[in-house]
Picture 1 (cartoon, rainbow, N blue to C red):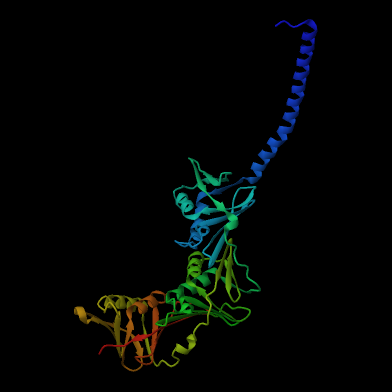
Picture 2 (picture 1 turned 90 degrees about the vertical axis):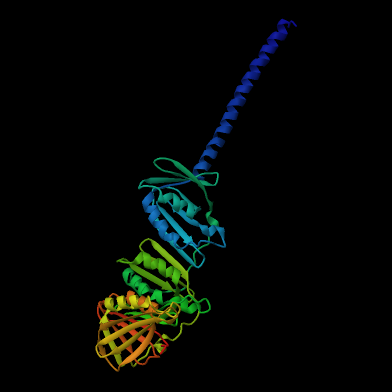
Length: 420
């Protein structure tokens, strides 16, 4: 087809106009599209959460917090650590609903955000790293990427909003105590607490605070320990029962610590704050038994002996005792203590004689060797005193030396009926 001159000029003009229009349109499209792209990029930057932290520093903190997490949880979110990042501070929390523990870690970051990270997977990964900086980056695809010196590792995270909030204590009372003193008080008593679900009040440690002293008591009805500090006091009288799980956590963290621990408490919860850590737990509900009523006041028969010597003999002789009763017999006359055990079913028996200091009437009394061993193990003294009244009344074991000023320990062990 051949175009005329006029038609060609008109077509050419049309092409120019069309190209020009397209140029304008393209320019406008570019101008409109570019800000959108920038907005998307900015949105990604706001959404991302990134921080850098030392591998060993993070592992050390998480291993302590990991003690809170149960092996099987009713809520899947409780299998996670909660990471709450606010600029240079990362607060990591763990909870089992009854106990919540959190620590504040210093990290390198300028972001904020909250996620829940699988505890077991993260701990297993961190244990394999030598000391090095780790970079955590929260990705858009619901994964958090960990970058080390040699590789990258991605694990799925959950929404931090699903994690249960820690309890806020309403109108709490407060007491301050040195960390090592609290750890000692727990260590001296917790072994005597019971495990009977039918008597929950006896499955914890009884805290009794007053302006005169602080008292910690544990009993399982067979043995009882009362630990008292006259060098520490509270501003007002208070009583509550602490469960064993949070106490075991505190005992491990605070042993040897010179840090001060602030204990806040009300009728239902207690909060322990020290250094960069907080522990909040639900208290055991109920009234603690009147332990003072079961401690015999008159004990005329008093035995004094080397703790290590007594402990070693009890351990050896108890090997030959009945495996159900664990009964050992103490026969005291003059300056001699005779320790014996017998298992009639297997014709096993053992007997040892020790020299001791004794004031009182000649007597025989039976004890469960396991209880006696536990008590002697939890005393640090060189010499111990065993006070008794009658063969059917509790014996009172106390340290003669090795106590700090203001420290007092009383251990009570119930006797067992002797087979004559």
